[in-house]
Length: 410
Image (cartoon, rainbow, N blue to C red):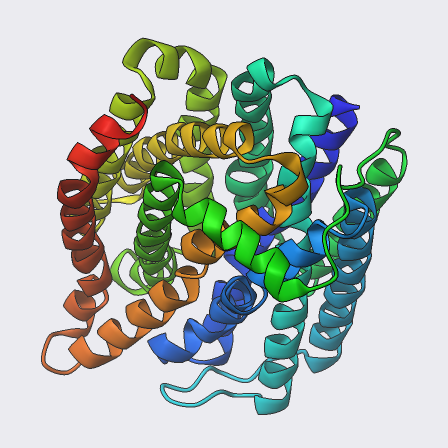
């Protein structure tokens, strides 16, 4: 069953990896305004802020396998609609410096991205609560290492490269491929056997349910620390990912394929780290491993604007994604181990509200910083401002959490 579950996650993350490239790149074909370019990825991430808590309440009331099936079916339909809409809209007009070339298409894309984002919140929250049912607790690091490695292959290696190739070949193609990927994931999850109902039915008073989860999280200082640190890191990471679109296009003079390959190169570091994540954590200890990953990520963020070409930039992402994989292995495994199953969905949703709800803020901040800097600074310099800001933010984060992390796992 674990192999089937990981295969389904691999397919959905392949689709997510394709989306990492195509949403931002598609926006840049409709507008050159950096803030508007960030709107489509923001629509994908905003549901993490708006719907994380309701998703957790639902997860602790409903069969988690059923939630995965519903979410995959919804995303299949949404990507199919986007693919058809893009096909009908071809050829696209030239992107203006301000505003968008096709407002109706842009509005449809925003709605579709929101729907896909809401479905992703439900699926991801439910999926993380299922892992402790699939393996023993003493095997969580190994299982999560395998899962994150497979997800990185799809999300950061194959997905971006494939998405970039497809969007350069025929604009609707990556969206149609995503519809197929989610349909296949639906079939794999449908074949899972066993019970994935919450161990104890949650009370019908949602305020009492949520209060119980909130009190547990507030009484768990390590969980709070990991949630806040992950949230800030995700904010900074989203700043660099969306800023990379214009940096690659205008500063480096590269196209969609090169952009996808740069992102895909990061997966090499993540995959390598995933295969040895358990040994690294055991060797360094969870505290030291978490400390070093934040420091390494900070250095990677600040290095991006100084990378002289695509190869050097790809190497930066190799290091950054490898560090991120180690952090995820530590934080997710700890969370799955210490939270009781009957409240896992609710606590997980509160955790992810803090950890993932910061993503749209990072996307908006990146576009806003570039827009504000464009004028006082040369355009090519203004495009790199989010990278510098992310590096400074990472330095502050590392300094703030270094000692607390050192004491966290005593």
